[in-house]
Amino acid sequence: MNSLLICRVLRCWLALALVTVCGPPASAQPGAFQQGPPANAGSLGKNRQGGGAANVLGRNGQGGAANADFDTLIDLIQSTVEPDTWEENGTGEGTIRPFNINGVWVDARGSLKFSATKKKMLLARVVAKAPPLSELDISAEHDARQSSKLRYVSLPRLEAEIARHQKEKLPLEEAMLTLAGLQRVEYVIAYPPTSENATGDLVIAGPAGDWQIDDGGRLVSSVSGRPVVRLDDLLSLWRREVQFRGKPLGCSIVPRQEALARTQEFLNSSAAKPLAVGGRGDWLAGLRDNLGAQDVEFYHVDPNTRVARLLLLADYHMKLVGMGLAEGTAGVESYLDTVELQADGTAPPMSILRWWFSLKSSTVLTNEDSSVFALPESCVQVLSENELLAARGERVHTGQSDALNRRFAQSFTKNYRALTEKYPLYGELERLFELSLVLEVIRSQGLVERVHWQPSLLVDTTRMGLPGVRTPSTVETVINHRVIRRRHIIAGVSGGVWVDAAQRMEVSPGESDALAKIQSTIGETVRDGGTWWWD
Image (cartoon, rainbow, N blue to C red; front, side, top):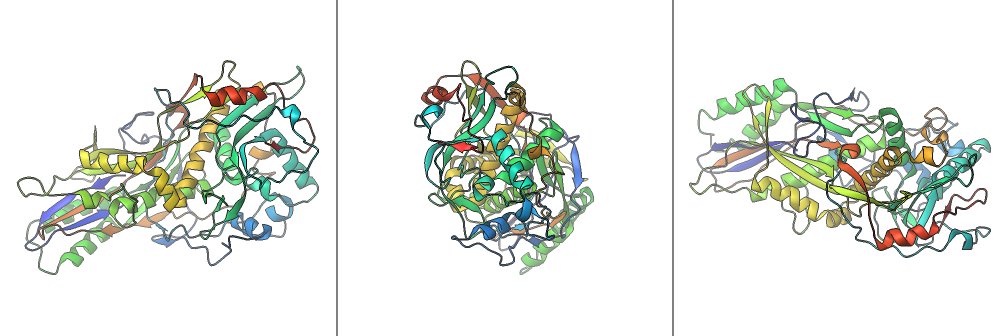
């Protein structure tokens, strides 16, 4: 996020205004820690779908009951507009209805970053040992809603079962849409082929259990209330992975340079004379109007997907917390509430405060033959940087972050777990980060080739379409302010999200109890037809 700190002295009050703008910095280099996406990042261009400024994402009163039936759950994922849709045969021609996420209306800017690490990170969670696959009673019917400390989901077998449903004109099962109730992905496992012409297996595994639709319309665990792993998110990310081959994804709300220049001129003009008593509202309105609408751009991700829209919403809401327009949690104080006058009584110098989501630097642990990969338990962080604003509206990068700027970013990261409990939107973002790491492991380690399997239906948009979403192409500036000692106005301009799994992920041999326990299952896989998950 880029937050421009603008200060001026008044006769009788001080207000703080934060404005949401910004895009990827021009000077950033791929993989740089302090910087965001490079200027030449392969953008899909502006999203032309959806409404313009200040769009409110409401669910139009559709669904949302915690005990919703299968039809309601399907309605969460798509709205049927033709009779031949996902609900009938799993191919999908529907459009997702806008839904309300904690009342957030899209006015943010994003640049998500998947990061590779230089340092090793041991898993914090020790997973209970799963029984050998040969001991599983695969002939009995199992309920995916039952709780499991470790559930295995075979991607090739899931694809085959979806293909069978399509062929027989059957609706997709709830368990398919929730990947057998996976609550997060902890492991990626490659089962080697048993013979030269055979196909092995590619499996993701993690804790699982019952699911429901919460009051906000999200698929969540019935026990913890946290968002579960979703099939549509996996397919969206996998398809973009096939298209862009490990390139980072992200989104930005890009302020128009002429608007930044116009805003700078407005600030210079208004600073020439004291602000009249009672003129605070007019000054803030003038600041907002000069900034005007901002353009939404996406990088290496289809803007007409739930994934793209979720990146934008999560980034926007994070900035609302930073601006004090949405409540944080214990330990997460808005940036505006931390700004104080300097020792000599003057306001802080003008700068730009940049915040963006990124993967935590982490190491994906693997066993000796690189058949099991353990993902980090926590993977989301917020990073920060200070920038300067030039006269013509250009942002100048410093590569540094001051204490207050870092304080907000670090507190958001440290308390991310609590934030996901208060705002499930952040839990949904965490599931996307995990899936992106999963796909980067699969790509970088050549796992589909190693198991002699080539995904077809899962990555084919013509054979298995996904519901489209409407993501705004422009957003309006939003402002908040705070009075300090009745003397100064401080304003801010904000910035982005960037995701780069290839640059920020390291796969390293390692030892952990979790790896040792799960390795006992390697060398066997379920051979029963139609069985695509097991505990």
